[in-house]
Image (cartoon, rainbow, N blue to C red; front, side, top):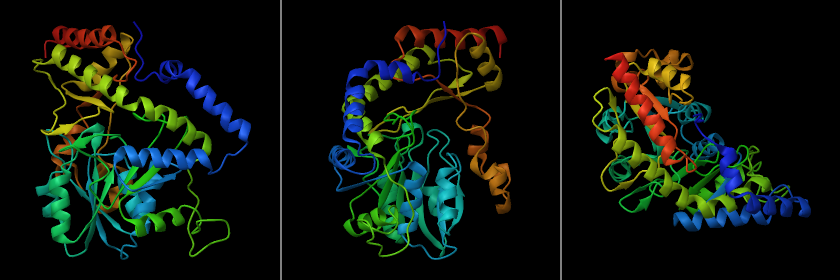
Length: 371
């Protein structure tokens, strides 16, 4: 049996007529920048998230950069972000003129621990970038209270958390602003790069919309210098179609996660994903911690199962951040995770039979290895 890590073609086939119709509509109108479909998606996404403003941008990284730029942080201000994440969570801090401060993550959930964040705050700290890693809700209630108390901006990286919840409130609606990615492999993915920003604050939304459009709301209306990062019309139209299916797809992801749990629970050599209480995990990634991870990955691939490592190097351990002078032991949890995490296939089109095949091969690997 061959099981890809993700099967975007199968997803397309399940909604082919809807996607083809909307693509033909965009092409027939020959309107490729802005317009009805962008406005429609922005309004629809904001409505479903129960938030006031949505600004479409070119990708999730641009979304983070736009937020950080719009906040106009003092030069050299410190911004705290988790040591275990994709590099966008950190590089955009530097690009916006601030200094990245890494914080180790919780050993059970792999996300920011408010106590660890509090220990990182100095008189130069200006903001916290919280990442809802793998679809797990970061502790936003606690982080929001901490940031209010210390007068810090709170930014949410929701690239992997489309409709993740804590306490019945959606990820992306807790902080000052939030960034979403619609990279093709995301729970809500475009057919190319795409992203958006959401916020409750009207003045901030206005500034971010201008920043991402050369400082203008309409052509030649440049109040200040900006840059060019727009959600293109074709991607917005496709995202509007896929958004109508997203809740069902998330439900299926959760069912797959439960099946993995029932089949793999009790295996001493692996640790299954924990889920924080009073949250809804949307399982963008199903990452286990595995003893002899690399050998397991090779064994699964030999049996037709593709897996991915998210992430093979914790951010402070990357060459890009060697100038900070960190050592792996400065971030013991994140440095340990980089040696153990393995992401198993999880996508709505994955069948129960395929999940059982993946699980069977994991069990067989450890039975054969005797480790």
